[in-house]
Image (cartoon, rainbow, N blue to C red; front, side, top):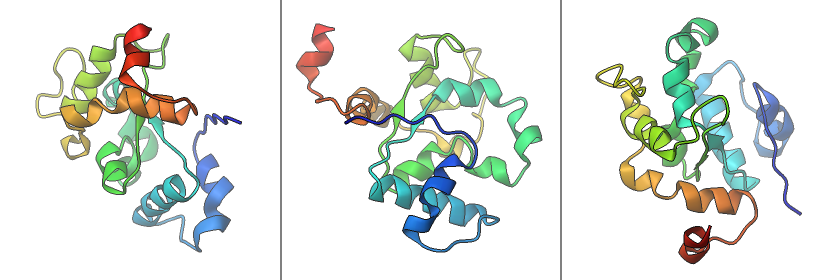
Length: 153
């Protein structure tokens, strides 16, 4: 059976916090570490929309605060923990054009090239890492991935 869960806020932590180890939810580093452990131990593949970071950049920090924003849109952190990342566009909220997502993931810039240095650029993905997005989406959906399948669609 394939299970896809759309989680907001603390949902992931509430589901799995008793399965990993005790932790302090007020500590951002602990939350990020827990998320990585949950992803690996439960086989969770986080789905992140790169264009959300560049669309949200003007209001996100105001809403979650300067400390918690460091754990938001944290693709590099998840990759360093060994998580696979499946990305999407969240169409119709964002453009379905995959190149916008790749651009946002690699540069952390919006479609107009802002901010010039990228928004929290240390969390950017490499171009090579974005090439695994399609494969990870298949795996996240419980499907078998092969380049031939992608070419035939």
